Amino acid sequence: MAKVVTFGEIMLRLQTPDYQRYIQAKSFDAVYGGGEANVAVSLANYGHDAYYVTKLPENPLGAACESELRKYGVHTDYIARGGERLGIYFVEKGASQRASNVVYDRAHSSISTAKTEDFDWDKIFDGAKWFHFTGITPAVSDDAAKISLEACKAAKARGVEISCDLNFRKKLWSSEKAGKVMGELMQYVDVVIANEEDAEKVFGIKASQTDITSGKLSDEGYKEVCQQLIDRFGVKKVAITLRESISASVNNWSALLYDGKDFYKSKKYTINIVDRVGGGDSFGGGLIHALLENYSMQDTIEYAVAASCLKHTIEGDFNLVSESEVKALMGGDGSGRVQR
Image: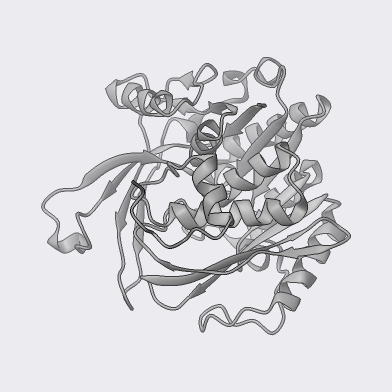
């Protein structure tokens, strides 16, 4: 299996119990999560040497967070220490017609105040095959954006494959700034991952014949998006997740993969959602694993979608499934029957 490096911010996740609203909650369930950390956990579960890079505060919360990553087999050798605090995000899970609601409390977090000298990328990428980051990380601070760019340059110089999930977060930055910063980073990226609206929010590339609010998504429109991303940035592959939101509780879930020549569409799953946070990251982890293992393009997109389908049934950010479980779903075993 391969050495894979991911870089980003991991936070303390505080979630209201069950489906309570913030105003009702007398306590919060605590776990940890963050885009690139979630991907690292998935890849460790699939047997890869997954290294997660970030900066954590030198306090018990930082130590607990690092311990949680190691629990799931993620290597933490390159985590920098220092800064003021661990970022927090609050989650109020939606149900039926009420949407989920996320509130961030991440100002002055350790990673947002990190500097380029905190990370020795030549050492970090020694022996690495793949590097993954998301559009969340450069949105955290201008310094985090600089570090992301430095990481991409170092990875590219070593011939490391680079993937990026655009992951636009309107609560962190504007579309205008996102387009400028991500446009510079994209020149180093080999594989782009986006959802049904990221390309529009970041680069103004909108899918035709599509209405996200009503859940009407056009495959042909997203094929145009894939082609425009390849034409503009010269990336090798584009994967787009397609979420049709019937309600907060029930989604249809599928994806497209384009390799510059052919399009590959996955089967569609109807999911009764337990927890959708981390769904896109589990897709990214599945996609990277399948590409590293030289799956066919069709099997690659099927694996990524099946993996993320299973994540929607698991509480917390991390996708705690094995390769065999994903392959079983790929093969049609989605009945949910008790395994005895």
